[in-house]
Length: 245
Image (tube, rainbow, N blue to C red; front, side, top):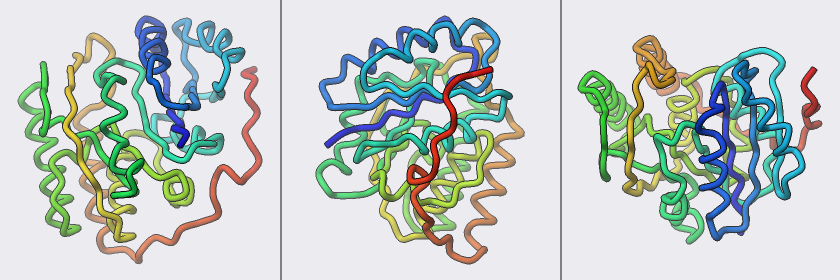
C-alpha cells in the first residue's frame, strides 16, 4: 500500500519545512504531491529544492486559484492506493495520518475523516465551533449518516474513488463537495479521533464566514441534484506542466 499525500500550499514559508519533515517521518510508503497556489512569500524557493526529493512531485499554479483547485491539480499526479489531504499550516499533526487512513487500509471503508470533535481541540474560537457543528449536523440530516466533523481538513480516500469524482471546487468548498459526492454515491465515511490546534487569522488562517455560507449551499444543493457520476480518473489525463514561469 502506498499513500499519496497532497499538500496544497499558499504562502507557508515559515511552517512548510516543518510539515514536510513530519510527513517524511511517517513509516509508510508514500508519495508527496506539493501544489503551490501562486505563493509570493518565498515558499517557491523551498519548493524548487523539493523538486529533487525522491517520491515527491511539485506542481505550480501561475495564478492563485484556491485550496480546492490546488487539490484537484494534485489529484492529477496521484500514484498511491490511498490519498489524504495535509494542510501546510500544522493545525493538523501528520503523526495522526496512520490512524486516519487505517479504515481504508484495512478495507473497512473507502472514505475516512479525522474528526477533531472526537479528539482534542486547542484554540478553536466559539463561532468556528458553532459553524462546524452546524455543518456536521446539516450533512448528517441531509445524507442520513452521522458525521461529527464534516469540515475537517483530514480527509482520506481510496485513490480509485477520489480520482474519479467530478469535483468542481476552487476554494474551501472542497470539503462539502467531496463529502456530498461520497455520501450520494453510497460510501460510508469512517471517522477517527485526531487532535487539532487552531491558528488565528493574524497567523495566516484563511477560511472565513463566507466559506461557511458556501459550504452550506454545497451541502444542500448536492442533496437535491441528480446523483453524481464517476468519471475517467483525473490522473489518467495529461499531467500539468510543473515549471513555474
